Length: 214
Image 1 (cartoon, rainbow, N blue to C red):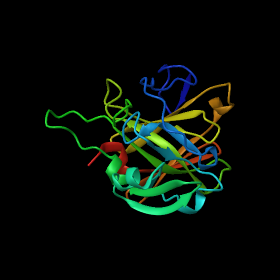
Image 2 (cartoon, one colour; image 1 turned 135 degrees about the vertical axis):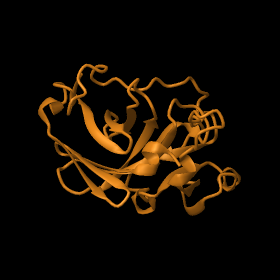
Image 3 (spheres, rainbow, N blue to C red; image 1 turned 180 degrees about the horizontal axis):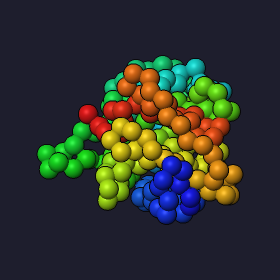
């Protein structure tokens, strides 16, 4: 793996966090683009939902969209019920609910069933313009020995893009010859409390609170 903007030699192309074994999640219609092993914990009946024709109207950069097989399971999550599609109850949950604070020992808690300190959906785009959709994202705070934080984005094709931060400042992305990204440029701009990252034709908007917690 070759990393853009000075993060050479860390990992290899396509490398990502390992997944924990989990029970088979309750089936959610494929047209709702379900992903993950259960929400909020692995094996739970609800699941995170990605972008599709059936969900695009309910996606929000500041919230997580979750599908539950029953009204009772949806009610247990809190949040706001936005629709029922094919018998699945869709719930919009503020993203802040997925940003665990540090525990009393000073370490960050993990989202159950993952090795991420937080998960959310982030605005993303892949045509060189402004973001037009949302992508699942997970963060590993203090991932590197130098204090680097890793934000991993799952793209619509299932491949992952890793972004690297010092504090709230993005400074690089993983790249590889295999997907043509080895020579891509890396640029960052700011919008209030967000970093807008442009890596080649890819654009990601990452909120500071997701990176550092709080």
